[in-house]
Image 1: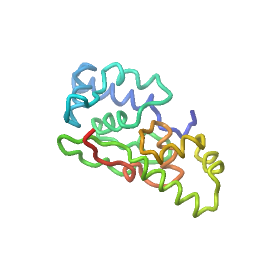
Image 2: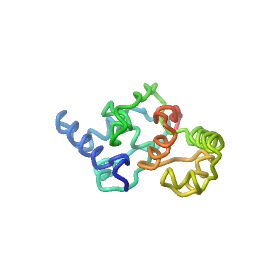
Image 3: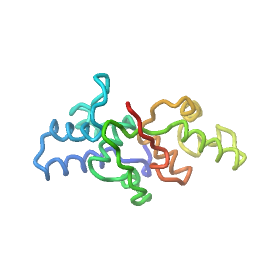
Image 4: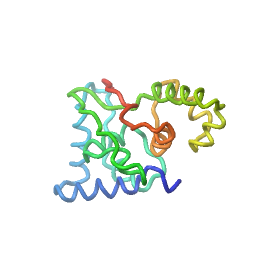
Length: 169
């Protein structure tokens, strides 16, 4: 964990402060977070209260879940990274949709920057602070995690919101 990483501990503290200020249990707060991306189908994954409560004890957390937590707080990912400021506001999410990271777009941006700077993947990985395979895996369009995603957007010099998309699931 780097001092300049996204702080999962600070996120937990902000969630807990907001939950207490609104007089909510963890279960009620989690229902509200899940409700931001209304259930689309019976198979849609919902965060559990234990997942939300445990975020401050983790070193890594699933990116899409963190986006839901950030939307509930009305905060940006950058606001939890020392030295990045507030960043761009997360987009509104229509009913029946969920906000996810667009890892294919993120990989394309990394590739473009890598080529423009005349770098090999090993050099990019060293500067970003992740493994080469982690960076190349983004091309598959899968999920990503915090704090890794913020290391990538910081290296790219772009706001995290540029790499989000709406999804049915």
